[in-house]
Length: 303
View 1: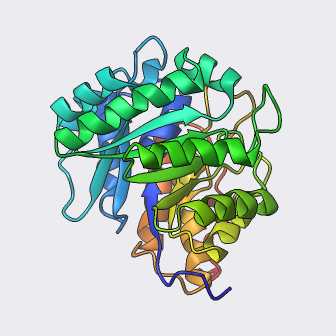
View 2: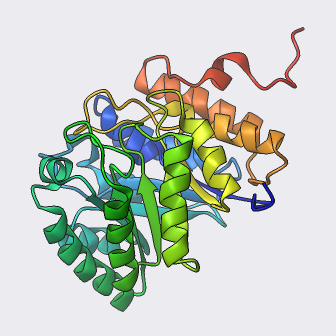
C-alpha cells in the first residue's frame, strides 16, 4: 500500500473510445462534449481518432471535430492513430500527442487493423520515429493485454514483450489495454509487476473496462503497484467494435470519486464532471452505465 501515489493523471477517453461505439454523433456535439470536459479539471483528453472511415465511420469527421474545439488552457489533447498515414493526418490537424495500438492477440489485431502484431510493431516503430521528428510524443497501447474474446488467455510474457519492444523503439509511454474487460486484480498485478521488473523507469498507464464489474478493483490493483496514469470514460461510455460484449470503460466520475475517497489527488471537480456525464448521456440518447451518475457521491444529501 505504500506505493500508492499521492496524485494520478486521468485521461478522459469518452470522446474517442466512447463515441466510436455509438451511433454517429454530429461533429458539433462531439466538439461540445470535448469542450465541456476541458472545464472539469481533467488534464488530458483523448479527443479523436484518425482512422479509415470505412473501419470506424463514427470517427470520419475527426479533423472537423478538432477544428471546432478551442483547447482549454493546461489540458493536453491526444489523437489515436492506426498507422503512419493516420499520424500524418493527426499532426496536420495540429496534434502533438499521439497514441497507436497493437493487440497482443493475433486474431484481434488482424480484425482490428488487418495486420499481424509483428507487422503492427514494425509500423509503430515508424510512427514513433515520425512523431519524434515532428516534435510530437507517441504512446503505444498494447490491447487485449488481459485476454482476447477470440483466443482466450494471452500470456503476460507476450504482452510485456510487446511493451518492451515499444520502449526499445522509443515510445514515450506504454499503456496496457483491458480491451474486453477480462482483467482482474491478480492479472493486473502480474502484468504490471512483470513490466516494472524489466522497465522500472518507463511510464506506464492502464486502460480499463468494466465489462465484468472489475474495472475499479483493477484500478486499485494498479495503483497499489505505483501506476499513476489511467484512462477513463465519462459516463462509462465505450467498448470495442472488434470485441463482442466489451462494454464501457470505467466511468471517469466513478474513478474520481474512488480516488478522492482514497485521498489520491486528481485535480478534477467531481460535480462538474457529473454534469458533463449527464451531457454525454443526453448526446448519445441512452442511459449510460455510470452508477455515480444515478446515485451521486455519498456527500450529496437528499432534500
